[in-house]
Every structure is written in structure tokens, then in C-alpha cells.
Image (cartoon, rainbow, N blue to C red):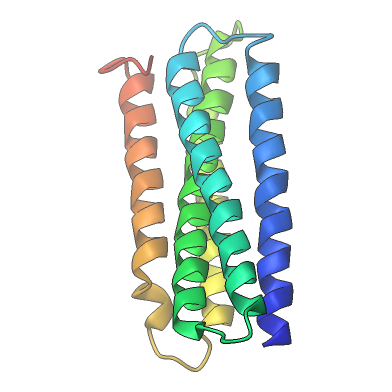
Length: 178
């Protein structure tokens, strides 16, 4: 049980740190707004903020549940899972926001629309996916193909892939990311 208490506390600290990071990023990007994409990036970061706040709340509730004399382990685990999904979705929105933001800032440069600009979001997301796959293989070692069946991580990667598709469409001026 002590191990779970420590883990919950660590997630509270990490989620709180992410709240600070998201608010700092928002403040900084509004100082130097790209010509496009600020609406989408702000929307994604604000939604991520909500998910991180929820992660802190859910982990705090799990920590509270773990301190009760009549520990309801089932209830505590529900809050921990809820916090994990919330944190993961918030982090996914931050990754997507950074992908849009970096891409849009590069488009604003005089060289603007070139293949190197398009390669930034591709390389950024590929790196993210490789790290996720490595993490999953470590996390699920000994459980054949479990890492590929992780619904939450598959959903998060799908959202990032959709974002990449939108960036490609934006690059070829088939749509404009607001």
C-alpha cells in the first residue's frame, strides 16, 4: 500500500507541474502570436489544463481514500485510473498543441512553406510515438502484444495522427488551422 501512496503523490506533483507549464506556455505564446493556429493551440492547452486539474483532484481523492482506516481499495483504484486517463489525455493535447505551435511558427518565417517546416511535426510526433512504444514494451514486458492493445494509448496516438493529418492538409493549403 505504501508504494501506491508514493505513486499517487508523485502523480499529484507531476500533474501540478504540468498545470504550471501549460499556463506558462499560454502566457508566452500570447506575447508572440503566430499568424495562424493560436485559436487551436489555445483551445488545446485550455482543455489540457482542465484534464491536469482533474488529475490532481482524482489523485488527491485516491490519496485520501488510501488514508482511511476502512480502506476501499476498489474506490481508490477507480480514482487512480480516472486520474491516469485524465493526465494522459491532457498530455496528448499538450503534444498536439506543441506540434501545431512549432509548425505555425515555422510557417511564419521567411522560408515558411518548405519540406523542412512540414518535417518538424512529423519528426516530433514520430519521436513521441517511438517513446510511447518503448515505454509500452517495458511496461507490458512478458505480456504478448498487450502494449499494442492498450486502448488509452492507442486512442491518444490516434488523436495525434489526426492532428498530423490536419497539419499536412494545412501545409498543402487544403484547410487552414485557425
